[in-house]
Length: 189
Ligand code: HEM
Ligand code: HEM
Image (tube, rainbow, N blue to C red; front, side, top):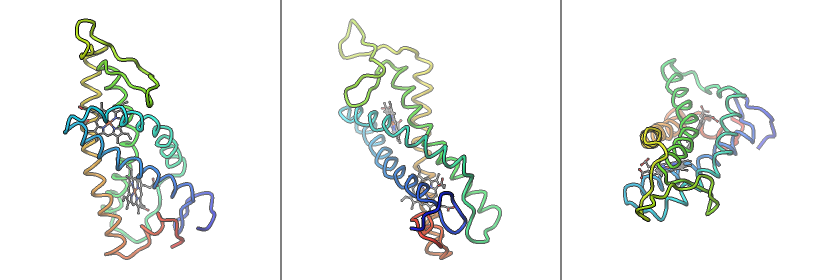
């Protein structure tokens, strides 16, 4: 890969490429684990899900900061304004979604009284119900519902947006036959 410090139309910086694929490697399994554990009520996975999400937060924030500082990549081909608008809207949703998910998860877990931590190191303690060892008491019912609803909607919404995103990448590669996907793989196109 050619060493460039900032993104150009014909090549992305190493940082852009690494950050994109690292985030993808974290986000895709996290979405799958989140959906599986909540549908299957696999409570053994909750601490792992929370821990990975918290550890990923600096990476997700660094990527968002890098993208916002650089501006958005310029399209390679001559596309219709509507297509360019759609790509940009999807990229914004992806970027904001990667931040909204861990933050809403933290809000929900903290406010609901379940608490959270990183692999056994408690950051927000559970609010145990003194009369029932299996139950917790919400610190704030309102913030708990807000966090839970946001986490769920953004989570499922992001899955839909990601399907469009990957379909878009494949369309560029297979139908338009331009270098959009290869550029994100670190090639000079
Ligand atoms: C990369 C970050 C994260 C992703 C992609 C992610 C994704 C998801 C998804 C898709 C679900 C299933 C939808 C739902 O029921 O809400 C879920 C559930 C859940 N997530 Fe996350 N999450 C992330 C980070 C976090 C963090 C940091 C916490 C807490 C500290 C958290 C706590 C939870 C909890 C408690 C549930 C279960 C909700 C329920 O059973 O109703 N998540 N997550
Ligand atoms: C197999 C999965 C994925 C493929 C094939 C893929 C492919 C691509 C490609 C080719 C681009 C460049 C678009 C352009 O130059 O206009 C791109 C950009 C982008 N992708 Fe993905 N992507 C994947 C997963 C993800 C995931 C999981 C996320 C985050 C949740 C994500 C977020 C973004 C964002 C925000 C951009 C805008 C450019 C940037 O910020 O660097 N992608 N993706």
